[in-house]
Image (cartoon, rainbow, N blue to C red):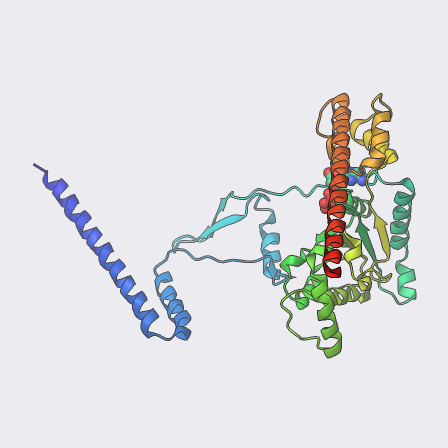
Length: 390
Ligand SMILES: Nc1ncnc2c1ncn2[C@@H]1O[C@H](COP(=O)(O)OP(=O)(O)OP(=O)(O)O)[C@@H](O)[C@H]1O
């Protein structure tokens, strides 16, 4: 026979289940009434009211202080981080704050739930492999730019410089940006344009950046639809409407952004665009005054390989060098990553030789496929023209 305490537990469980059932039925009924009898336009207000009613019973209040207000820095966030800087470690991203009626102070509890990101990027001009003439040219240009504050003021131009880095993937464009930042001791602002939806937000972004900064827009050809934007640009210029609401960043918005950057005086700023396809860019973007210096990052040459081997492996010569140098000039590759795959110098170089042979084979196969496609096309065209001729 069940004991009386077991019986009371079963009764309690039944009561709880029946209450849950009736609450669920009520919720369903309310939901159906709202959807069937109340105009759609009033739904949002009604749900807002219900939500407010229920949150009155909650014992939690979530206060969110965002780092940015839109794209501009939020001063409250800055004040909060300054205040908390000496109280918290950088790994802490969530705080629980409480104060009971009897206590005088606020209690702050910490939650560790996010990884910190290491922004220490050790690339320098010493570790970048590129033609030495090109490296010297870039360094001279940067130094001249830094020296010329007075000159820019005198000629009435803003103290800015635009660089375009172009070349195949993996040829060191991002590494060169890091090297420039390290050399000048500038901050890098990586502008993720796909996250910016309006031209006006670009302007806010510009205001939010500090001096001594490098604004980077990577893969510019992929970021904005240049064809669509050419059309947008025409509309923009014709209507001369600076307040039109675009849903995406347009080429005209981007050009205005660069021009505004170039006309704001005082602070030294560098803007760098990168692309794997320079031929896709609008000439308006490339002209001097917008992009002053165009830097071609090419595939590694035998000379570049020697520099890379000296930097990465600490060697100036090796029995495998001859074979590598012969292959590398025709293989069109970027071998930096390959050299770091193995611990032993010999293994690294052997790995690179295998990689170069593989690339050469792929190139040959690619060539054969292309020839076959061209032959098939010409046969088809012949057939078509014969057919038409009948
Ligand atoms: N010229 C180079 N000198 C030194 N390291 C290089 C060079 N080119 C590539 N690397 C190395 O190869 C890797 C890829 O380079 P990086 O990301 O800079 O290329 P990228 O041109 O920006 O590529 P993507 O166009 O795909 O963004 C990095 O680890 C980098 O250190």
